[in-house]
Image (cartoon, rainbow, N blue to C red):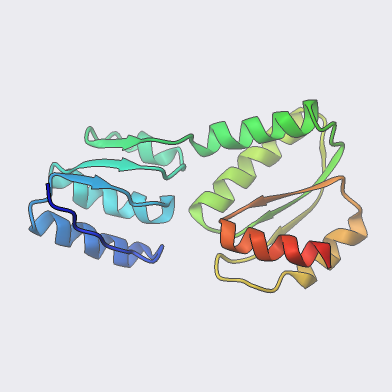
Length: 171
């Protein structure tokens, strides 16, 4: 075995370039890409090259593409969003929520499923806000949400932004 490490920077174009490079090198197995936005466009290149792919990407469309060599090793947005909304309603007894998503394939997908399921569980969505996966300042969004006084905030996005957002919530 030989390890060939690449970083797509969560950029779909870069992910496709890396997939093509791995294909050209006749790689047999790829652990990744990490996220849905890269996995979806790179999957075609990897599939056409008969490369076995294990991804943690969660967008349901990934497995719906029907590629025989592509396997998801984590839960889909449908599973994640549904379980989190069910937990919020049944265990946390949340009645109102604000939803924020980072407009990535993952963030938008999991937020949409959460919102849809939350509504069926009797949770009222009092606000919806959007950011980006590169944002660091969330004060305007959080100020708008604070005025709506939700019981909880659901964030569909990645950890670096979630950490910064949490620190700003505490402020």
